[in-house]
Image (tube, rainbow, N blue to C red; front, top):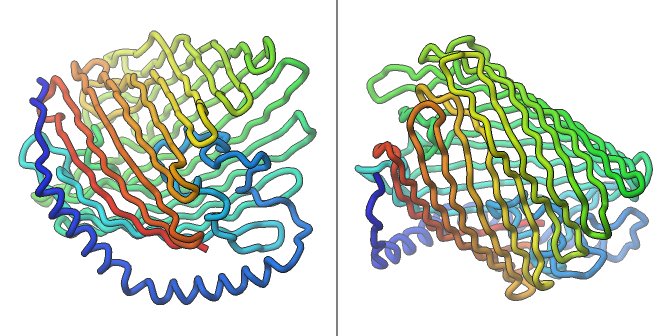
Length: 467
């Protein structure tokens, strides 16, 4: 059943905006004095360092071509949520960072005040809330002539004005590296450990007194070799996911140990350059998803194995367009014969298109099978597309707009959800060490299960300080 469109009144949003500015001021005022002192000392240190001629590798953030930063991302599609928008402003508005031998240390802290019109993502009895987010982050990037090693550490503290049971801390530590055997042969590695809390809008949220805490550990390694017109690539990876139990308002406990699992994935890829900028691509993936508990809370065996085979075209035309368009077949097979085995059409495509030096447009399409704990559903067949446009309005102002449509079919449970999401963001770098930003978003989910429907307005204001 699809809900009727709702009209959003402007007056409540204006009053919310006033509350956001007020809350943001109360949040950051105690920290500004200390941070300003640190920034002044760092600025003096960097000024002294700028007088020296470094013999180390080039700054890993700088483009050799001089093109706009919005066009120089090699993987712009990996930042759909805009976590790195502030890093896309012109070089003259980028912080210098701190030199530590062959590395560059880039610390920053971001303060955000957010309004959510339907925080618990409910079809009825909607509850708004104001949320403060404080997010310190450190990035350590290598400046070697060859090879690469980067480390990121980030924490995000969420403080709720009304529903304080949802206060939580997300944290992540990640490292990635590249070893260059030759100019045409490299090996890569990635390691990530995190603590996250499940979003209240997740299909797997059970409505506990507090959100579900998730721990994750992911490792991945791979290699790529170019030989003439052929390029061969392969990688293997494993992820460990665990979920905490959560209490309910009645005092009972929601057990989540039946969700704890390992997910393993192996990928092989071959491409052949037909002519400059165009390549034929073939890719094969195999996965294994193994649950700690043989049976889940509903008595089903959720462990499975699957594969997908795809072929298509890869593009890399200078700085104009790059990406893949791959189609094929997928299959996921569950140990429990009562669960339906999703199979059929596979799609995974992403394109980064640069119509001008000031603009990048990212188009993505996807059809895959995701895990879910919805009763009687084996997996969630996820199909959708999105478009994101990022534009450098001024050297220090970046504008971003995005929209997406996704269909989630819960195989075997008779449930289908449609999710529509649109967002607009802006980042304004005042000086290299400080920026402000804002975001306005709207999300709507329709479903043939009425209790799964909701709509949500999000308004956020941000202040970032960095060295």
